[in-house]
Image (cartoon, rainbow, N blue to C red):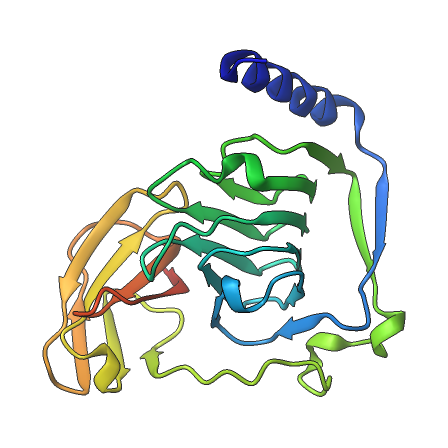
Amino acid sequence: MNIFNKTLLLFTVSLCSFFFSKAQCSYVIPADVHVISMDSSINNSLLPGHQFLICPGSTLTVYGNSTGTNKFYLESGAAVIFSDSMGATPYGIYSFYAKSGSIVHYNASSNAAYPFLYSLVWEQGATLIDTGGLFNYDSLCSSLIFDYSLIGGAPCSGTNSNNLKLTKNFSITPVPFSNELNIYCTNSFSESEVIFYDLSGRILEQFILSDEASNSIKLNNNWSGISIMEFKNKNGESHFEKVIRY
């Protein structure tokens, strides 16, 4: 089957899913899931065959190749961003379970990994950016329910033992913000470029930070709402934050 026919077939399957797959969906969160309760980055090549529960308001940035099947359970308000800015395009076999209000963003410069996006289960209202639509399995649910019984319940409360304790090396204030944003960063983010994207991946504006530990930037363009802010340092390393401008 050539790529055009495959794309047409998968598009048809996705379209049928949109109209007919509106049942309630329920999934048991596995006992060995990694709970992401703060903005974090992971090297996918070091965590093959793992499962992640991303809590409301948290963003998980994924980079590097994987040799196993990784699963991502997204609560409402959670985001997962795949990026090749810190190394190789994040190849792998991925399954997503995305509640309404969550974001899945495949922010890679190559679309070669699209066939590896294995399955997608989502509620209407989830935002899918640059995923290509080439899922082997795509199901739209009227409601998506997570069962936390295997991990003791309330995994995003911050008390669960599976929480990944990853420390950010920068902070931003205020949150949300209006026209000015204060950024404090450690040496690893000195001389950083800061880029704001809308949810379609379009650049809204960008800035160069000074060598100082603390920077204030005043936004020029007239935009508001949720955006993705990328920190990119002089070594080409990146980290992503979901921010809100009112």
